[in-house]
Length: 127
Image (cartoon, rainbow, N blue to C red; front, side, top):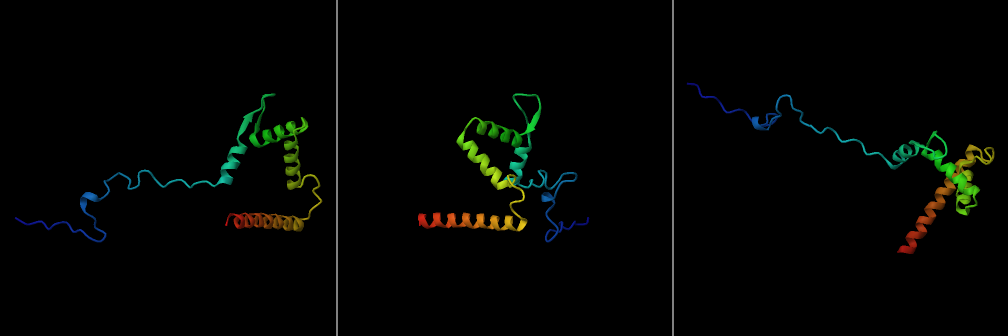
């Protein structure tokens, strides 16, 4: 009779009972999906198409929101008018030749500096 040596266990040789079974994955649930950022999620929501009440066509949500804002502004809603004016001014469609690309960069930086100043002022008040 020959005595069998116990199975070798150690570095790169796990015990037999803890090894993966043949034909079975070591990671059955797989790698988790990448969490999407707020901007991607917002684009997905706004690009979804919805049926407009008046006619049978479908429009993206962003277009239907703009149409609703236009309707409210035409009815005399002051907040809708102010919001629409702000959108038009910030988008630059009122006068496309008003700002050169260099001027747009400067205006963008001024807006960021203004936001930082507001944040700093708020932090100073809280302290």
